[in-house]
Length: 160
Image (cartoon, rainbow, N blue to C red; front, side):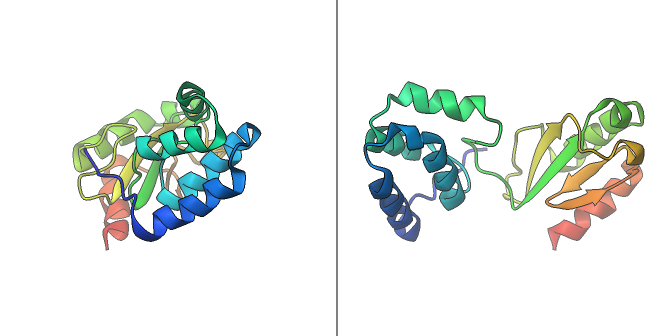
């Protein structure tokens, strides 16, 4: 999916203020990236270039930090973030089938966002609810002992 950067208006003004606050401070890179992602929802190339220039760090270093920390993303996220646990307990209880069902129903692979911008999908290694597996989260909501046939109903609640 190709989504244009929503880098205009008020968002750019907020970014300008952020960069001005940290201009020339390479040690603030992670903090600035975190705040920039909070402004835009992700870190588009244009924003990464502006951060590199303002903090006086090589663009390769900025990309290195963004690609190292899983918190950062260079792709827009959907309105609702779906996480499928594929930790051992969830995996043996059918997490793979849940993932297949989500791929089928939403046309998504992990790391992608639906065309309408409603859902993003990620695979995580553990959600800390091993006794309740298989587990998925949608945003902050935990759904336990999810069977593939229940998935449509769960997702429908977030489509509204």
